[in-house]
Length: 107
Image (cartoon, rainbow, N blue to C red):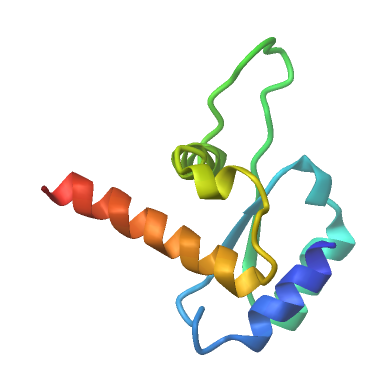
């Protein structure tokens, strides 16, 4: 699945021209996947792993940014379930939620 997603991202390169590093979890730590990303996309892949001797919740560097953002978005009723017919509508509601979060922080 990672290759399919990254191919689509690569096709919209005018929107992601600053992308240089991709953080992935342990499921994408294989050498063939990393080589494919480096050769096809020209991006760096960094695997973010959980420390082996830890139990329970562990704050993982960089992955926490994504989890935190999902938590913020779940505060908006319309985004908690997939009510929308078109993906573009869902994308628009995500933009609206993030704009509202930024405006509230600036106020």
